[in-house]
Length: 333
Image (cartoon, rainbow, N blue to C red; front, side, top):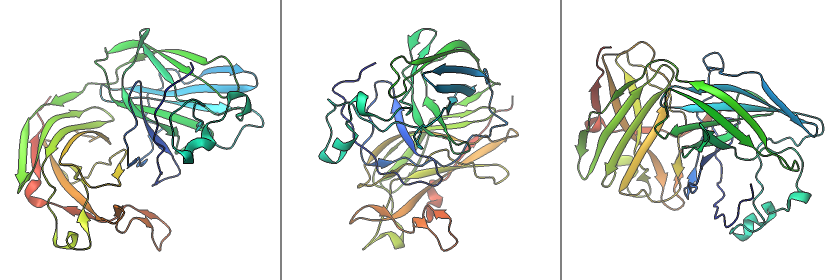
């Protein structure tokens, strides 16, 4: 599975946890100027292990497939690596020697014969024997050493049941590891398409879809216009792009699974397709609460982001825009 003519932009990673996530997709380009942030780890107890004991060994390296889960909004799985004298990192950062890359990335363009043995490459996915074109993330698993996890949230129209084939290449091992596992949709999903718009000044956003599944919530929306600035976001500082919290009718804020920071001037049009934690008991309504971070336009860094005095990583302060809040009724099921 040689990859040629691959144009990549390596990402400076800013981490909320010890996980390093990279945006991936079959046939999709990596977005520029974005630092994916791993915001949460999957609850191991809640993961639907369609096959938690699939294990393959080649040339002293063992890969174990687990935590296979699909609920209509998210398809995910993890891969654990075992073996002797393996590198500390799990995910491969090597680039093909013929990749188009900047000078700073040349050190990652290492011939296969000179690479360290045991790094896991980005998996290739087949659904019922056909290439899967979803978009998602792949990286180190937060809650488990020597493991990676893949999570896809922009899915093709997948059936409720299918066979998933996962082909995984490992550096210095000639033949890919191949897992085949039956997958069945977990639980029932409520899909709401309100097509509702909220506006403030030149900025507006329209919620296209809200999917509420047993363990995942998905928000899809389009925004347009210049983001409004607070009094603190003028002069030396400016507002970031718009972000969105989801709050249930009990006041609980759902945890967004990944928050991407774009270190550049915000665009005036965005398509947002994001995953959040589950709502739990079915609410009568949810509230979308748009917010921004305060950024420094000299380098578009987030003000207040980094390790605080207590040693914990901080994202920076959120500035909520009250007039942009939107309430979406959830139909009874």
